[in-house]
Image (cartoon, rainbow, N blue to C red; front, side, top):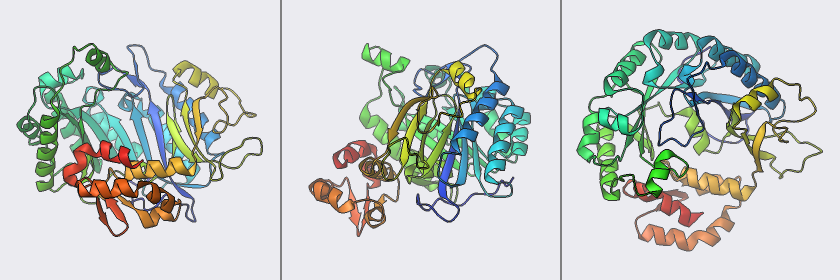
Length: 420
């Protein structure tokens, strides 16, 4: 299988080879649960059922691809949880099965594996390369030991840097790092000190997130009880600007609010989300959004697009995927596998394209959206808000392109909410 840099996704529309498609596989297990994390994960000290979970994911994949419209796979992304805990043989079986089904061998497809320094070593990294992994996303989060303790991480700063060195030495083409800023008691200079410890010229991508206190997390509970220190907004905003300036001077393109890339190294998988492409979600608690084949027994909207989420019950997921459910479509009907399903109408799809597109450097092109949506109707309802936001410097318009300027990115959520 190829490990070359995959091409950019240009459009969410179907081509001769099918709609652009990302495949997301969720691996739910972690050694421990970080107090800020609101992604579904299971902290375990018990043996992980590596082979059984791979069997379940492959079984789900085989069913779902029978029910989606023809697709052209652009990316495969293993997220979690901590997918670097998955045994190589099981991980490789899933990759090979997907590649065989879509005839991807020899093609340029981005294959990302999320990793933690605490479950990482050079030998495994070299093995991942032989499996076809061509992009590693390493969750450093911080290079300050007290901050790592605050965040509940299982590694220290030296272990994080050692893992990064091993990743860069492995020969895997694209190595990415995740960092969190905006922690209480930290100033912009502290964030810059951490950034300057990284081998920036060797990294292809950085995801740099402001700490967000999510409601259904231990941090959320502490915040509601008034027992969690919160960094002042102005300090977080100043850090955001300082990081932008530092990374821009280092040659990184700030192409989405939380994401930076060296030229040509944008995340293909995440770009698919932002451009409204379909993504096939596999595994416990995975989300997916796909165009499904027509079914005479189920009423969907005219575009036949459906969002779903799998059950969060790990054992039930594996049990059901191991059964013969031939008479029960998994994408369209719950059948015990699905926890949620939602037909996506054109209004919802347009709102999501606006919301996600405005988080990117390019913004949204109204002429392009008009090819798929009734953009004039949206403009008639939102012209007043658009003009007001432009006057406030929170939005720019150049012909048919609407963008949020960089100096208003930090308050982008409020701007987007006024538009949708």
